[in-house]
Structures are given as C-alpha cells and as structure tokens.
Length: 292
View 1: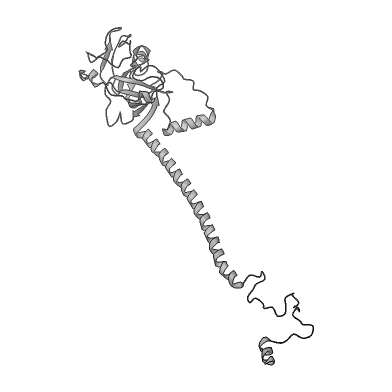
View 2 (view 1 turned 135 degrees about the horizontal axis):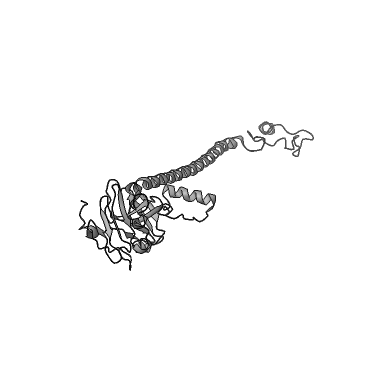
C-alpha cells in the first residue's frame, strides 16, 4: 500500500530536500508552473484576447479624429460657398436689378430727407420707359455737384468701404450721383413764368402735391424744350434744389442724358419709421399731352 501511494504522489524528497526546499528562482521545486505565461506574468491567452480590442480602440480613435476633421472642413467649405454665393448674388442684383443709395441733402424734402436709404430699380430706363413724375438717380452730367470732402477712413477702411459698395452690400454715396424728379420727357416744353406761377408741361399747368411745405413751383422763370435722349428734372424742395433750372448754361442746357440715369427709386427702406413705397404721382401729369 505505501509503495503504491509513493508512485502516485511522485518521488519522495531526498535528504536535504524537505518541504521547504526551493528551486533556483525561489519557487518551491514542487510548485506548479503557470502554463503559457509571458514575461510580464500575464497569461498569453488573455493578452491575445486583449490585442484585437486594443486594435479596435485605436481604429475607433483614428476614425473619430478623421470624422472630426471632415466635419470641420465641411463646415468651412459650406460657409465659404454660402458667403461667395451671397456676394455674387448681391453683385448681380446691384449690377442688373436693384441698387441702394442714401440721400445726402434736402433737395427732395419732404419726399426724401437726409440719410434716407432708397432702392433704385435698374430696369428703368430699359424694358420699362421713364415717366413724368418718376424719382430718378443719375450720374452728374458735369458740374452739377460741388466737390465733397469724404471723411478719412484709412487705407483699410477705404478699401473695405469701396469693396462693399461695389458689391452692393453698402449704399452708394452721393459723390457723383443726384436724385431728382422727372418733370419733362424728350420733346416736352417745360416752362414757368416766375414766382407764384405753376410749372407748365406742353402748355398745361400741373398741380404738384409732392412739393415741400412752403415751396413754390419755381422762383426762377424758364422756358425750355427738352432735347431728344434727355429729361428735365427738378427737386421737390424747389427753393433748395440746384436742378435743371440752375444748370442751363452747362452742356445739355440743364437736361440730363437718359444714359446718365442709374434707375428709378421705388422704395425708402431706412430708417424704419420712414419705410415708404415711392409711387409715381400719375394724376399730376394725366392731362399733359404728348409733345407736338
């Protein structure tokens, strides 16, 4: 019986090899070794299971970084596209359809006052002809305007202002443009005999409800026939308007070439309390016949 037990339990320690005997690495000679352990003591199988998880985590982090960079770039690209599209649209609208101007003087009181912002339709003159009573913005035919000293903005501010004005995001200043009302069309005879008398167009006196309070039709006598390709313009604030009457000694005899007209003002958009549609006073000129 004792021998059979010895075979089952393995060799009996010899002299000096008692229960406290150890191998060279400090481990009891009879202690079992961990199969498959690596240098760090972790089971090789566990390390092999952790490796795919670490690789997946690395791929996930890289994918997250890529998606973050892609999202940021997409936002920048879409913002740039929107801004460029808005600028191009503004330039197209300003060039062919509508342009903004601001009013610098009192010559059109009370219809328009200083610092009003107006929108001008550039479809006229063009597909739709000019009419008597239209409020038009036109380029100075030559010598109508006195030089205006602009405030110093500095080179950067000046470039920015010019760029935004050219694109159409800022209203055009009055440096070389004027705003008046069309009274006579090509071929019309426009006249007034002096203070207290009405203006006549083709012999018909006109009632002008748009005149500024206290203004008279004209304190200056005149009698002209509007040349072909031009119009006769006057301000609504007659005693404070250097209009066609006061430029008869200049080229064109005071009339404005149609080619100089930027367009017809159709609405006041600023300030908010002065937002108004600028309607043509058609009744004023309803009885005026065509020029003979």
